[in-house]
Length: 366
Image (cartoon, rainbow, N blue to C red):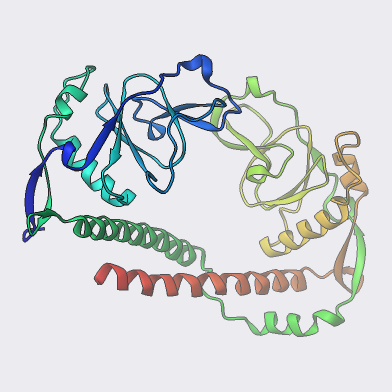
């Protein structure tokens, strides 16, 4: 940047300003509208709503991009599709075709020179100010602006990528998941898997009676830190974090919701009346995960729905298919199977993170 030549310009060197055809108010807005309506707003790229009336300004090959200046806010927004406008805007068309990156550079340089005088009409000032742009051979250096913005974007992406990878590396190290080498027991269970003996077991016999959660209306929930589990797949069924005085179920247990969908919980939680809790807490983590998968396979068959909910009494009657040894569940086999599968999955994640770290370093150091 120190070696860049700079020149002073006004907006007339770069843009044509065009008259406003009509100004729409909120009576024209429609929640199902397709055409964006720009205003002087600073949020949402200046789009304050949508309408179903025909667009007043068309983006085509001759004018692929428009600049909308917010008269009260000094904000510049870029229109990349057909649009209409509300009040307090100025519409500009680039005199030559410019990329979005170049327009961002120009409008940023321009905005810095427009005084902020509070809630007032800024266009009267903006049209007169001079702003500095890179210059080469007495001409605006558009190529420099393009490459400069592209470089900034690449560096920022690399920084974000590095942050994510660092977080992943820390997580894998803390949890001990970075070690993906299979043990002898894990290798053996994979080899002998086709020859395992299986047997059906009743959940109540294995883990005692399941517990049904209690209803807690949304309006009665007090914001807090305890996960509150309800039926559904979104966010693993966690609908809120609460501070109510409810029964707390321990981690390493299995929940089955009203639809028969089973999930393993590695944290303490509360649950509503559409949740059955299977008390697998005495099992090892990997064995409990295996049992959860078996519960899901047996319960989530389409039999249970809004008209026929799955409850704790149904969990007590549920039979699940598990590896067995001498007539009892072979939890050691289950544990080794899940551990081996986890390592296969994590191995791909570790390989990805290692490759991304190398690529990120090359970008940052270039």
